[in-house]
Structures are given as C-alpha cells and as structure tokens.
Image (cartoon, rainbow, N blue to C red; front, side):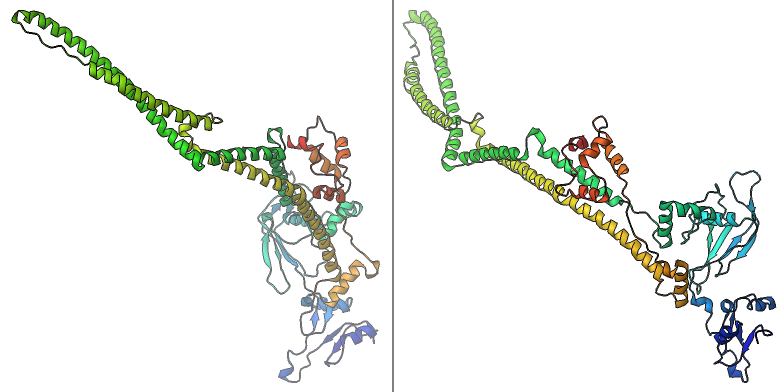
Length: 523
C-alpha cells in the first residue's frame, strides 16, 4: 500500500488518522462523503499549508505536523501571543546619518504564528530587520544608532483568539519581548552574569535585585534621626543623666520658691509689704509737706509783721498801734505734736518692711512685685519640665533607633532578598512545569526543549559587592582619617550575612554606629 499511495482518505468517523500514520507513515484526510444534507459540515480536517495543490502535496513530507482531524482549529490548542505582521509603509533609512545608508523598502511581511526561523542569504537583512524591531521594543543592539521612523509598525495578538493590535516601533511600545542575536549567544553562555540575566528574563524576572529606594530613604532618615538625638543628648558637653539631674534641681528650686511665696503667711506679708510701702511713702510726703508749710507760716508771719511795723511808725502820732501776727501756737503744734506722731508711725511701718525683707532675704528682686511674678515662675517651671520631657523622649527615641529601627530595617532587607529568591525559584518552577492552561502537547514540547532527563535546576545566590559597600561608606567619611583598609579592619564586613548583621546591629557583630566611625559620620 505504501508503495503507491501518498495520502489516505478516511470516510468513516471511527477510522483513525493515527492508524494509517502509525502503520504506513502516510497522512490521512477525512472526506465529507455526505449522503444527506445533515451530514454536511459534520466532519473536519485541518491542513497546515497554503490552500493550493502544492500545499496539499506538502503534507506527504510532514504528515503528523500538518494534518489534524478534529472539530476545533488545532492552532488554538497551543496558545501563543504571536507577532502577525511587519508593515513598512514607505522606504525607511535604517541608520542615522550614515552615508550610503541601508534602507527598508516599503513592504508588508505576514508572520505565521508557528514561525521558528527566517531563511535568507547572507547580507539580505535578516539580522538588521530583527535588530531594528527589537531596539524599538526595548532591547539593546550592537549595530549603532537606528532611525526612529513612525512608518514601521508591528502587529501582535495577545491571544490566538484575539484581534491583532498595531504598534508603532518608534514609540517604544511596552510588549513582552526577548531577543538574543546570534552574535550574543556565545557571550551569554561564557559570561555568568549575562547568562544569569538571560535566565531571569526568560522566566519573567527582568530586574536584578537591588536595595530599594524605600530602604535607602529609611536608612538615611534613621541616621539623621540618630544624630539629631545625639545632638540633644550630648549638648553642653554633659550626658543626659546630668542634664536631667540639673533640671530636677532647677524645677525643685522654683517649686519650693513658688510654694513659699504663695503660702498663707508669706502671702499676707507680701500683700502687707506693698501697703506698708505705700503708707511709708505717704507719711514721708505728709511730713515733708508739713515742714514746708510750717516754714511758709513762719516766713509769712515775719513778712507781714515787718510791713505792719512800718505802718505802726506812721500812725504813732495818731496814738494807734496795729497788733502783730503771732502764729507760734500753730507752728509749735506742728513741730511738737504732729511731726513726732508721723515719725513714730513711719518707724513702725519701716519696721514691718524690714521684717518682711528679712523673711525673703534670699530673694534679690523687688518684693513689691514678687506676688505678681508668681505666674512667670510657674511658666519657668513648665518650661523646665518640657525640657526634661523632651530629653526623656529623645532618650527613648535614641534607644528605639539603636535597638529597633535598624533591626527592623535589616529584617525588611533580608525578607526582600528571600522574597526575590523565592520569586525566581517559583518562576522557574512555573516555567519548567508549564502554565496551568498549557495542553499536554505544549508541556511535552517544553520538556523536550529543557531536556526531561537533564535535571536542569536553578539556584539563587545573591552576590554581595563588598567593594561597592566600602566605597559608598567612604564617601561619607573624611578620607584624610580613613582608608579602605582601616574601614575594613573596623567593621569587618565580607559577606551578605555580615552586612545584614551590620544593619541589624547584631550583638557581637560590627555596629552601624561604631565608636571609631560615629564622630566622623556625624561630621
């Protein structure tokens, strides 16, 4: 049979395409052979070829790959997100500012969803075309500066069941895409870093691990807060304990003083002191006025009597005499009766004033305003208490920064590294086992590509760049005092684990705020 038959036609539904292929290696197609109208459209054969007689002949060479007898389109059973078309609307120069420039001719290039290779002679533009498109999709190229033309577009389906969307290459569309040029394959295999990067991109982890900006911002903020607390705690070249002791003494002094001047007895003394001052001032003023008035009376008497004597000399021939003024009773009463009483009262008031002064001999200010200043002293007490409270809060914050802040930051960084590692491992597992929606055929193809029996595995190891770490720290230090060798001897960090311990301030390990570098960091 095999010697003279190229294609087997199956007419019965229970005939299997696999039977003829397995036995004779021949392609099988099914014919409708309908005997009534209801049988039309009930039998399906799918042929992967151009709809020509030459396409039909092609199935003789790849019968298993090109013929499927089933109701649904076999292409949809192997889900893809294929590029479907490259459109060059008009002639486009490939490179910028190049004499004798290479150019793409206006053309539309349809792409098969099962495309696996592009065939063509050397120098026909295969690599240039792919490099041009890959550069527009975010890949690096060694070919130089490509032009950015809006006349080159590419169409892509997100699914074989969806309509293709068009993307302008010069707009750098965001499309999942990976391209490795032929010249890069050797470099990638030889270069461990490039090979690792390629594996990560293949499984969907495009970025390398790095300390996130959030962690860097936290570390910077914590360090600034740390030195802010040190500035407060070490102000005036005294420690916090001494500062609090001095504040307590000041607070006690003011409290005792306020309590003393506001006690019932002392309050009465101070209130009486003010009235005694007013009374003493009044008595002094009264005495001065009376003395002056007595002098005025005496002067008045002398002046008037002098004039009266003149008149009496002129009227003596008339046997007349005007009596002279005599104010001695008034002036003597003032001098002998009034002024002594005023002096006595002044003495008593002055004694009361002196007594009050002696009671407040430690106070150098004005006793008359002492009661009025109680509010000011109470405000001073509140101010001192606030300073002590701020000092205690700063001590607590200092302790939290040293014991909690950096410990938590270290845990966060450590956790992010573990999550990154787990993510790569998980993505690799998903990649090797295939997605949930993969068919058995798709999973088998993936296994064939990876090599089922090769035991290909991926392990994650985060490389720690100790030189970069030391260089970064040296940027914050005075290089006249520190060298890289000295810094290495102080903090002794060699591995990623050492670095994490350094951040966490793990007991017995190198410390973020080592006493040898802390003053330099602060400066």
